[in-house]
Figure (cartoon, rainbow, N blue to C red):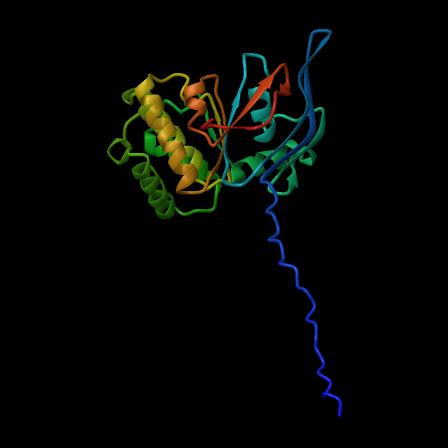
Length: 252
């Protein structure tokens, strides 16, 4: 008598599903930019390809004339490239008209400049409130946002002061508050510590790190100072309009 037949069932192998990788917030491909000076065409950026993920804090470094501020202005929609694609949040901003770019900047980008660019006839409160005047927020909601944001940057007791009544570090804090008041996805900073003493610069960089780590803001910062660049998570070196080498961890 033969043994009973036992059927074995082989389960199909299931491969683990890879998590889909998030699209970069900033996608730059084959970007080039030049300017016309008289009869001469001066190339500034050449064949730039770069991705910046949402939540990154990236420093752009390079000597004067390397193209780092031009690249920042292109990403922020202040200027347009000669060729290439530049997508921010999935939108190719090179295709937008000047009017569309202005609306896009107001909703998506916060700006921090070296010399603060505050309105001297407005108080700290009024300077921070200014971007909200372009929105549909009511007066009470604007007041709540401005007071909260000035408290975050440590200027709750200076909101009625004018720029000339504030130190350089305090003025830059007002500029930071103005940059984040509309809750933009991207913050661009052009030499934000260039006009500050070392102590004030350290305070501003620490505040920018908090915006990045605690509020998840994506920051792109132009700086010529290696110590300031180390506040970022990654450093990109530019020279003569080209990216030199790979993206470098700031802690390296």
